[in-house]
Length: 196
Ligand SMILES: [Zn+2]
Image (cartoon, rainbow, N blue to C red; front, side, top):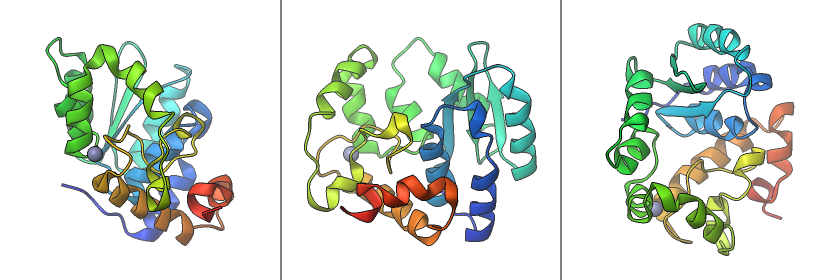
């Protein structure tokens, strides 16, 4: 069940997330969490010293947090989900669909990843990086994700995945509504949001 945040609280929370301890892609993840109903974020902490900062921010904004021994953190809207999601990720049996759904990815895209298999994800991502996303579907191009310049945090199942487009459209609207925020400025100026 997606949670939608009141706009003022969402931007307040997004403004204060401890980005200095997180990879650039975390901006996309949290943009989707606060602006597009993403239920949880999974992220690798770049420095264990950031744990305390992340913990205090999660407390402040009332998000659940779990961190494992490998510095993978999960932040969830629903209590208990963070720990549950890290556990799904560690399971030895196939878990692409369960994990993807828990992180708010569309079912069609989870099914595609499941078909590719965990071992094939990197090759699939490389293939997708050569796809051309045209017209409105330019919004679902995931290729800028690692630099924090994307409107989806998953790999779409096709160049015209409607469910991915819904997510990206919501995220884009959120960015436009808060376009004066300095930390969103490079997304605001990007092709994804400015359209050129
Ligand atoms: Zn899809």
